[in-house]
Length: 273
Ligand SMILES: [Zn+2]
Image (tube, rainbow, N blue to C red):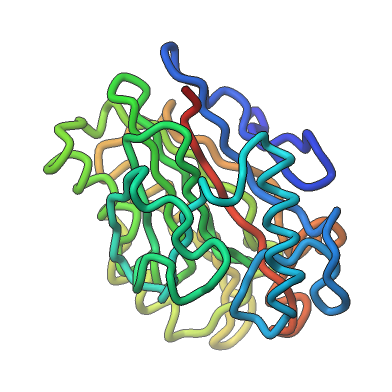
């Protein structure tokens, strides 16, 4: 598959091919470069809840916002809890969570909007970002899918909200699975695999391999793709990156690789008017 996530700036990878015919869409994933935070957050830490200095995180967020031609008060952040809550936001919500964690959209791991010039942003350090767009309906969204969010059904939740509330058929939705920890580096135990088995669509091949007694290497990208297909998204509308945040720790923050003490990257998406 063609790699859609291309590094276009020291601060971000950008998704190629996400533009719709009538609206320009800007979506990407930040790197750890071009910020002002010190170790272990060097340097572009964008998470306010990881014990980095708040002023530095805000400065880093401003730099990223500027890099993509926006200002931070156009951005909307969420308080992420590894669950399946998806919320619609609008231009009225711009700025929420941008300079303080507690003003973000509470208890939600998925955001979507129909408003242009409104940037949706979620934080990551190994979990899977999934970007959604319906080009015909001018609607965009993003979810945070670690193993918990994935097995809770966060991706299906986004699709079902668009179908029910926005009258967007799944066949009109396109999805990009972004940089995250990949099977090469993602060891999990029996407990995680039992949750995976419980939601694995019938007839799907196993998205994991056994490494040793009770140890497995999980392919969360493959599992999410299987769940997207089950929800009715067309195979040709699903794009999966090859970037692994753990193998790529020079460019990305990795919770696993750095033993939990690290910064956060952002997945971001907006329609431009
Ligand atoms: Zn890896």
